[in-house]
Image 1 (cartoon, rainbow, N blue to C red):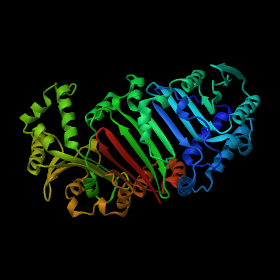
Image 2: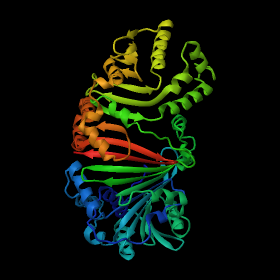
Image 3: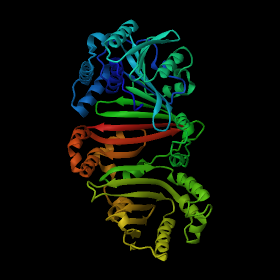
Image 4: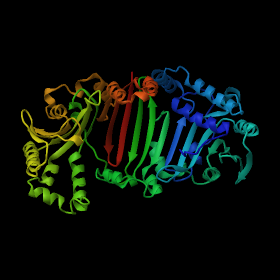
Length: 524
């Protein structure tokens, strides 16, 4: 959202508040559909468009109310937001009564379009809301303009009349049966043009993406990733783009739509993405994830990691490392030291990462790699250990016992060592000896898959393989221990809501170029 948007019109505040109402699901029924779709006034090529329900009904309404009650302890968020909205309008000297002046014409759906991304913010921003009585909505606009403290100018474009707040350039007017608010006059004109010609709603990419949105969702967010990158010019971090490309994904071809679906004890966000002509990475990392230590407060796993890493290593070898390794010398140099990168990377399968601890002093974690060649994994770790000792690296010691490898201690690493060990089909690179050994001796310890929280999260995802898990209480305990004393009072306010999150789970599945991801926030 543009950082300078102030929306002095109470009507503008209404629409911004209406978006909150939609996301909170705080309608009271009634109303009717209202004419036109909000996407019909979004300019063609808008890279982000959000459409939400203002008046959820039946089960959706009940579920939203239960989520709000569970998280915030509020029985009627709609009434709370309306009262705050009316109070703010009174303080501005421009009062209105929502029940008699707004509610009768408020429609079912509202939309927000964002366009003109420069890498930091959007140059064009607009809100469109359906109305059930365009004349009543226009009367409300006229009344608020008359009561405004700022000079309000009348203007028209292509036969559409609108109001301009000369203080901050906020524009409001009726475009057909939609009440439209924009930050700048040109954005309003763009909305008018879209309503009578080509709009986002007419574009094939948008229609194909929105067709995949979950029916009955509270809100849908459409993102044209490629267009965002194009509009930003050179502002998108190239290393981030390269990291995505190394997984076989070129984000310039991708579009996505995210649907928000509240439940009685969870909130689900389902994300459907189309990667264009690319084949989406596939696999099921849930077995590795479930085998990670049970006391992990956060863990993730990736299938097909070896293939992804192979592409990244090839690119790194080709480009070289500035001021360190010339192009084409990375693999060759390591091979001379007895480390064959091609063979090592070719034997890798999945990767996992976990973090555990309830305070800064107890914080540990490890990267876990699985391999189809245990002997080579063990030899690789031994060769790296020999190489480090051969060049005189300080703080390197051998690790023996159930797993073999080495550890490195350094002031730069903090109080715990970096430990690299291998056993059977696993390699672990851990911060802290305990975490590293837990990673490769998983069969000897209680695992995430044995915990009720993980089991509930996995069940909530259904047939979608789980790849990321956060234990809500565990993460909250760590966060609380890391908050400085001067910020504890503010954190306690946030904790009222965060303590109701039992878990966060993410999973995805692929079919050709289509990827479906599910994010589940479990609630106590």
